Image (tube, rainbow, N blue to C red; front, side, top):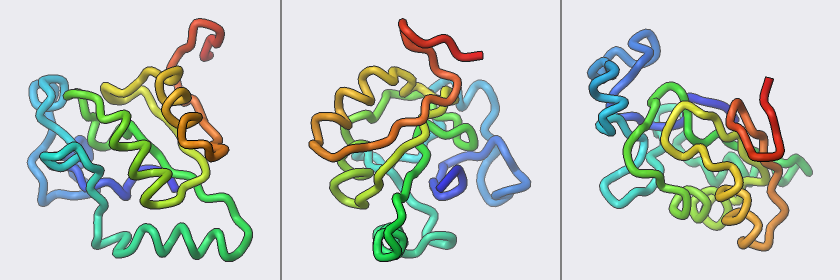
Length: 139
């Protein structure tokens, strides 16, 4: 599941959600745009995904692995990272099996993501989308 499930408090893509204020560079890079609530929990667009856990369960019932997308480019969040909250939500609450981690926000430390995901004890597939590791050069 790629971008579009997150409920952002502003938008860099007005064509996707014109009801939100346009997220310009001052807002986004100033840490004002977020797809997390005041407690640091991910916020789902209920108009598109009324029951995210049910959707993941639907995939699992069909013997499919279900992945999601964190650190998205639509919201372009540049405030404090929410690594631990995102992992808890993604694995423990929703049951996802994989994650794509983009570099369009503040949570770009893929090694730290991997450490937290490995600590859950569940095998999680990680897709590194344009982040760099000391031992991995993105093209």
